Length: 131
Length: 131
Image 1 (cartoon, rainbow over the protein chains, first blue to last red):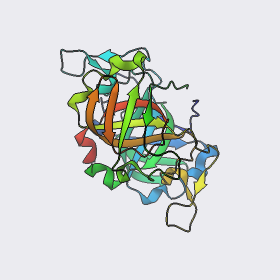
Image 2: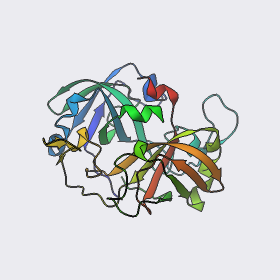
Image 3: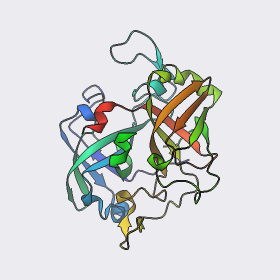
């Protein structure tokens, strides 16, 4: 199960400490730059205003199984937290698409540091909110 | 960027054709069985009723960049579709957690075929719905 980077994130957050803890806490614009080899896969993406973005948290510690969630004094499993430290450090945010320009998507709602590899982009389905 | 399976999905869908097209269209119960090495990472997961589950779509075609979305006659990019065929075939569903019993989670809302490798489990954040 090997991943290929399909693009990269250009964000104003230059370190893990500078990034918001979750995408929905970010009001800043980021650019998702999709590599030329995958540009055809973007056709039609402009018709959606909410996208699911998956990315590789390249600074994560993969051996971590328990963490202290924000503001809590009890250790919890990483599957009960949104910590970037987890066995498969795949980040997930739902973003608002502002503009598609060639291979680039201007979005709001990412917590990723500058240079984060992008793995996948999917339309967010309204029905997923109603579960 | 190499992934490790942290568990497996036991589902009533024995083939890709038998599975619903999206998790929110599934009303069936599935079991997420987390492997013993990662059981500690589940501590506290029972406090959430909605979880994000990421899994590996092991039957996907990774070379596909364009598909005909359901009910449409025009080719679209895979990033504008929820097709399992995509460069990094990572499935994403928001599920309802019915019960946690040891290493096993009983959930509703998965579209994955029986035996699908699980990559990650995260709490779904209510704020993500309001973007």
